[in-house]
Image (cartoon, rainbow, N blue to C red; front, side, top):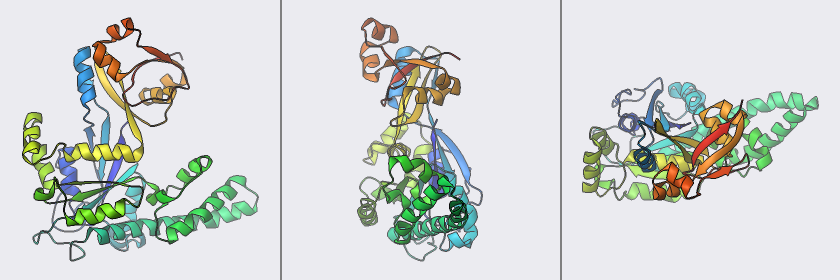
Length: 365
């Protein structure tokens, strides 16, 4: 399993340029006018992980298959989107289907690229999008209240619980705070997720800067950083122009180019890292002579749940997970050497997966 992120923002902030660069495609039309992207473009990329490269080499695997990340390029939102302005209802519907939000903020000056609001102000732009998402959430909850109140009067227990949760959430939204900032009890998480609130989604702010600011940021990114620190969000600043250049280079050339700019990682690597953090994701591996493969699961997943990411039969008929630590595999040099050293463990149904675990799942169906 990978995860998918919807790229949102005002028109002309660099969403489609970023999407094209990150997915190394030209699927999305980049143009200097609003709504050049009407239907969401989708691109999948392999998640780079040096550990997978190392394991494939040690195991002499014929294939190396990374887990994937999906980007959804959603057309620019504008003021009034929650009321249908600028095809807003359609766009907000696309946002509702993604796991996380990548909010692109324009943090560069360029007189040749018009701004829909007339000036560059990333905090104002952020507030515009956040407000539209909040309004959409409030409208959604108010509509649900009407139906739930009728069912609650008929003593429907689940409707009463949902109604109580909505009454708990609404004041926070009305105060201008996103749903992801609300403390939800663990026993209410399932009900909370059922509400499908836009502002509950994990968010990564991507500050799109000029090439000269890619390594250090600028006055715009400093302002954004102060606000992001106050909410449950992640932030990264990258230059979509640099990412477009990187996309045309092979791996050795990419590293040389990044080094010349004082950068260690590509924007893609940074977005993935922040996305994983926002979604509480970890990676585990399966390794053999046919293939070395990385998989994604959530932090706190049990071994059977991780097995289910490969195939539902693996989870349904789970017996045990033969488990190797990544460090042990590398230090020993092979699976056979790990076994000889007594460092392969058998873990049961209660085992909580650790990032980097290497599994052989035993199952019977």
